[in-house]
Image (tube, rainbow, N blue to C red; front, side, top):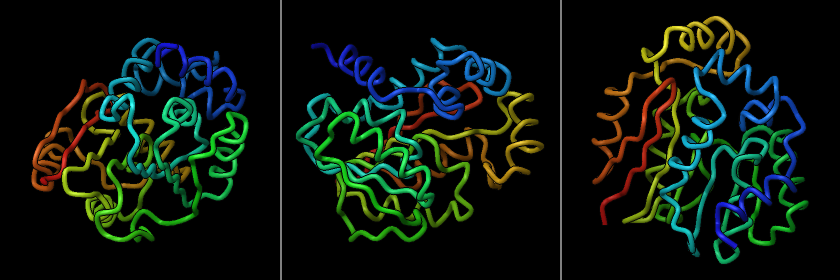
Length: 227
């Protein structure tokens, strides 16, 4: 089965019933409304964004991968279903979110995924541990962003890849308004926020190669550590 179809099948098994999961996947009526209103993206744009953000993970990847934070796992558990030889670790500060991700992993009968509660600012892993670090929806919420960048870099092996998605300020006025007046006040987002150029400069100071994807209200980067 083609990988895309295998992932779609796994999504159907994982379920998208909660408001949060529907919003993240832009798959429910309310989720589509939030995606359009806040992030200025429709379903097709959201799917394309996710596909490109995950493009740093080889199709037959069999190394060690860290996802932080894993959230509810709605975006990644179906992908991990197609990576049976990989050694995957999912970390999140929220026990509730991680519990929902674990339920999805159990539903998909994933045997190669482990879960651990922890703080990205002080990752409980040795230097040069992971081949890939993936962070799809997290840096906007981390209060200690500098520590998070440092720790992600530290645990990556030489030649390893960091796949990151970020909210970037200054690209869409309505998104900026929602972030500062709604999400930040609710505690979902934590300043400071960076522009695309500031973020690109930061990553280029750390990594040997940095690929910037399409930018709307969010941006994705694939970064490779020097060998």
